[in-house]
Image 1 (cartoon, helix red, strand yellow):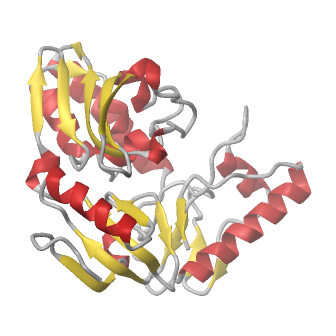
Image 2: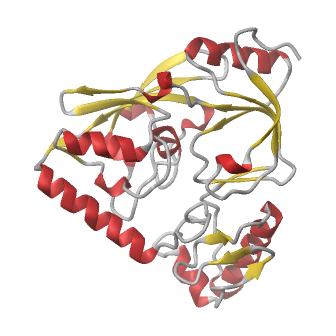
Length: 291
């Protein structure tokens, strides 16, 4: 396999510790490009060798097969993709910036709007790809424009109207997200801090963060909550192997330490069957599955 000379590509690289679930096999090839030039070269090499490409963020919404991934896994993790800059009431940030860093910068500059993302252990790129949010807000609402690269190495600037944001969807999956410009509003720093504490307190009360997990497993069906449906099926505490359904939040599957992707998928199939049998509803995964 001929890779660009200045790009470091690792073989059979373990992935499970790069996800919050702590589950998954190895990447056939793995690389962390330092800038756009290296990213473009890696994409070109993958195309020439007919390899699928997977983009890895913080791994907070992802279940990777126990067999691993055949192809090239690219993690945008260099300083280039973690840059942040203030532009009036907007923040421009790279896709690898952690949401926690983004929230801290906004708070320090008395800018409000990002508070609802507190406690989500992801990156800006991942949050944009899935239009992350809570009941009443989503990150897509704040987007002014997004810089992306297609899989041919071409860079585009997409305005808000070019992006089809909807519930846990963005239409950005056909691109690699490079950065985004987010439009915020001036606010009082004390009130912003109060909002952050309120959202954080709610997450801590309602979500189960005691063990490794990938957040909510299923999307909420229209006018319903997946966690409530799963709870009404009596599935809290059910386990397969080292994976089990949380007693606190039924839409969370936790890893006791040695859970496999097979264990988690088994629980997901069980949940789907029980919810469909009882409520005639087909739950759709919120997490990404790499098989």
